[in-house]
Picture 1 (cartoon, rainbow, N blue to C red):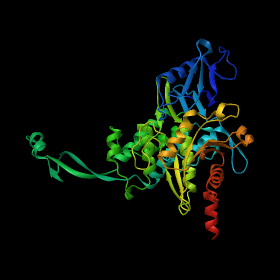
Picture 2 (picture 1 turned 45 degrees about the horizontal axis):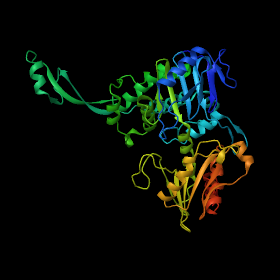
Picture 3 (picture 1 turned 180 degrees about the horizontal axis):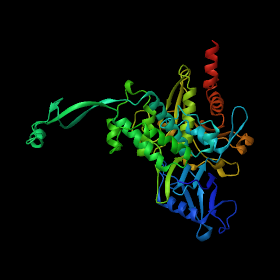
Picture 4 (picture 1 turned 90 degrees about the vertical axis):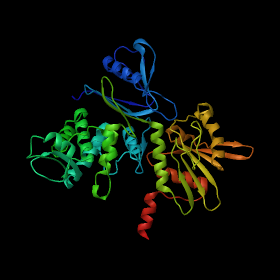
Length: 450
């Protein structure tokens, strides 16, 4: 696949047709690229548990004034001719040191919180990771895992083998022996165990290496993949991915294989991550941006949980809460925290949305206001906390946003800096519970000092 143009877009922005569209403020792309992208968008619906934004890009307008607007999804799309499309979150941020983080860095930071992505052994905080598209970063992470496996030696196992041999070994398969050797008294049709590297785990890894070699747009990655495939001589390609995954074993004897097989599952079966292709598209890896923010918030909350002072339950959206089945359209929380001191119970939910003081109710969806009452009743809580990403406007607004009735405050809106999530969340938790809660790095440093 040759390397060609690369186009970037942030959520809320749009692509238009270069030289034809009269729409101002868009990112112009060649007409043929626009057409291929438009065809893919209409052809492929994106899964979204909330039922919002069914398409990766939203088509607007007619004729030469057509545009494709980003909203609700981030990720990478690569055409078969090498042209790349990258959609990034709408927010940039600052880290603890005050350094500005690019939209791509924000995206990578949120990706690290995805439990289904085995990125624990791969450093995303590099210029190389920021320059590559997300899928190529995943390929590099997989290459690193397989390189470690090859370095330590491919694992072997016994598997049954049968053939017509000139020697007697194992057990004779009499039914086949009688038919095949009626006129050959010098042969035996036998079955015996052989110690081989041709086992399901190695077949899946070799198949993944081949798959990635055929679609990667990086010559460097292609050379690495080709070199790794050479180490799997004696291993067949998988003929049935699902069957080989079912037969895979990850015990202590298979140390080092876990992450590589997770990547293989993502690439070969598109499990946990939407990896798809199309008529003119080599691959596309897409994430609902709201789900990314949910995972990132839950991940940072999980790192801050103080079990001595709180009883905390990190929820998984789209699944039953508190061991109780729930209707599919019910309000769902991100986390529930209960103070052990006074029993105060607070429900947390995150919202990937830009609020504005110019909009009615600051732009908060009416459904979220209704859901507040459902969450209070469902979790028998005293308060609901909605967490939104901090923007420049909200930083200057300084207005407290809360939901009240005659009984008092039922919920509040808080803003968190996605460049310094744990510190932002510690301030939120301190305001809610009146107790100082330090982030994980400070607790770790304090423990070391003791």
